[in-house]
Length: 453
Image (cartoon, rainbow, N blue to C red; front, side, top):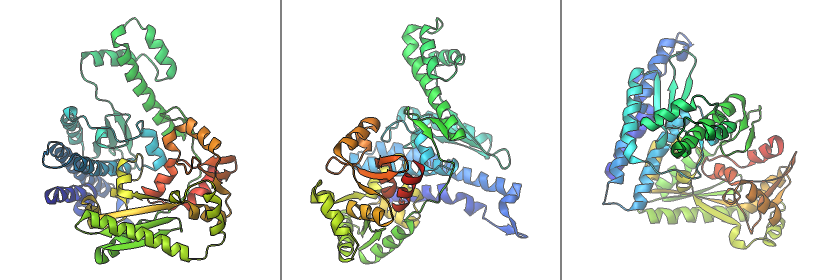
């Protein structure tokens, strides 16, 4: 673990500090540095050099990790995902991603496995692209957990004050070359999927492969359209129309960082976010002891809330207990583990906590648990003027049929219902994971549901 953590620290430094360490921010004659084209280009070049070093190191460490017979499979998966979350962070930074944009790039519901047989070849290809100009950077999409629509993403800053993102598919072999040439004759539309079935130049035995390749082109076109116009068709077939209004997202990174500081001094710490997220942080060289300390922190936070006088709290709890069991009132999550397997979300490597806290999380010496308190969440909503409560089982089942059962968190078979301008809505798992994995405060989402949906 010591060797792995040292590699991880070096990769983190290369990914996030190479640019500023080699081309420091500066202000000359009160002119912001990036108003100077030469300074901006040098800074971007240094950043891209760091990204390249980090990406190459991650490929090597992931391959070594997969071949390591001295550690458990669970630990291999943990290490691989913590490394891939660094690449996720680079993708977020390079493309200036928000969660709603990242969702356009996902097709699977969990991080796909890496094909190690092609990973080295892909690395050689992107390294060749990166040598063309330090004003560009090519990122291996397969190393991310959430970009499922292409093989390589390339950002190009060669034009001053402008950047261009391109998606690159790597197809090799004579059959792929032939099919790509033939598919150039078709527009990337669903109608083309029917047209190619009668194309005399595509051999019937290659038709399934041609359909897969065309579907990929269609997905990429859908993504470009949504990102450009804020409306269109989602990659999974759902219509998309994004609000033109923007809001500042409120996070609780600072609280987590403070609790990590306290836990490293005292072994444990606790806190609460808007009364409904109960946070416990534990620290110990023994991961099980750290887990126990974190759980104690969660329980203490819940105890403290019970001591406070919250208007209508007991009434809401009694209302809920008519439909759900007492053990459903609190659902507790290890937020690092949740972050590693959740896509898309803000990668934990972009949480606003100190670098040594990140390393201790990876080493599992720091454990952060968060309990979602449904009673306090409903109280939070109602005390701020929102009509919030449990849906009926029928409403929850209907919504689950529309979006998939796993995307609808339920309590006693019921979802959390929010009255909006366009009728009742049920909160999906994507919203809950933003509370837990992206460290976003809950109350603002009730405003989003009521105003924008």
